[in-house]
Length: 221
Ligand SMILES: Nc1ncnc2c1ncn2[C@@H]1O[C@H](COP(=O)(O)OP(=O)(O)OP(=O)(O)O)[C@@H](O)[C@H]1O
Ligand SMILES: [Mg+2]
Image (cartoon, rainbow, N blue to C red; front, side, top):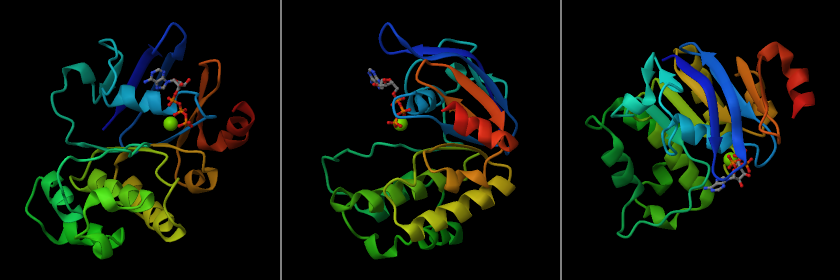
């Protein structure tokens, strides 16, 4: 899906975190959102997902204003903060099966295997380590074959093998025309996947640059 952001300004308080941000992505583009802590990467992602409110006519997925979209099932999301507690016991298996819109099939099993979730498949998700939970959320974001995939610092707490598995998965989705937005501090991970960088600075300013301008991105942030 195409993504269009037109003049997005967002503030939690008086001071805007994001100022007049505009960019366009074609279907299958890979965007890396980069910048120091607190520059608004997660906030931009929350705007794109309607987790925080944005004005009408600001963000479009395939020419549809996100404020007019009722369902986001074609959008996969891996949040940065996973500190939650369910009030009843639920296993990894139940958590993923509930989220899957189809009956369990070969695709489902392949995803479980790719993210090595078999050893924790019957565990209560409240008892997982941070990295294990992150891998469950990565699987969940991919279950319904999203057309847009948004990942907020997904590599932070997972081990090297899982990082490599995620890299392969993203490479594959990228070549299958999924539009991907990744927020990260891990340039090695992003470098050979990304088509564009959105570099945010502490003044709420930004630059939207193609992959070839990597050196300028590093200088900017
Ligand atoms: N719910 C909130 N209420 C008020 N201010 C917030 C809220 N969430 C974030 N902020 C502020 O907005 C700014 C941007 O935060 P954001 O989480 O988007 O940054 P980030 O680039 O994702 O940082 P990090 O690299 O640490 O994840 C920060 O100054 C932060 O303190
Ligand atoms: Mg963040």
